[in-house]
Amino acid sequence: AQKVTQAQTEISVVEKEDVTLDCVYETRDTTYYLFWYKQPPSGELVFLIRRNSFDEQNEISGRYSWNFQKSTSSFNFTITASQVVDSAVYFCALSEARGYQKVTFGTGTKLQVIP
Amino acid sequence: EADIYQTPRYLVIGTGKKITLECSQTMGHDKMYWYQQDPGMELHLIHYSYGVNSTEKGDLSSESTVSRIRTEHFPLTLESARPSHTSQYLCASSERGSNQPQHFGDGTRLSIL
Image 1 (cartoon, rainbow over the protein chains, first blue to last red):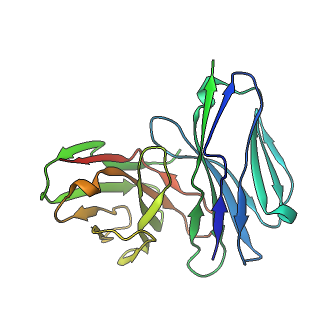
Image 2 (image 1 turned 120 degrees about the horizontal axis):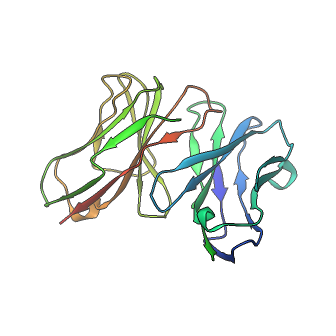
């Protein structure tokens, strides 16, 4: 069975601070995919990034960066110089490559950026 | 940009009514999903489909039903709405392949009186 844990339920930071959202996963598959989604107050989930289990390169996109470490089964997300528009609920998800290719979402981390 | 549409956006209706939540996508995606989510909380998969005439129940037991007669259309029906059905319902679609991200609609916020 696969599992995604986002231990941080809510985080508050002051604008321009850096913040890291943690994601820890469990899976028996050797091939799998990890995702991050953002859900702003308007409600629609927006896909941010995908990572496959063979690629441990970290990725940076503007103020966003992702740190994938297989050794600790973690796929953490860092926002640098946070802005009020970053306020949202962020979900980490895991997709198995075999069988029904089930997608498991974490419980989400609510980020509030205070001006 | 993803093109997946849900209607209605908001619905307030009385107990016992039959409700159909619509979901359509114009991307030709084979896979479609329905999730139930209380605002800002965990997503619960209630139904999914891998293609036309394919429907499966998800992890969360639900009294709703779905159909997939056309690739682009995946409606969800509640035969007799109850206050416990009050929630947000999110529809999503994706291409084949486990590496494909899901594209979500804006959701339907359902309130049963």
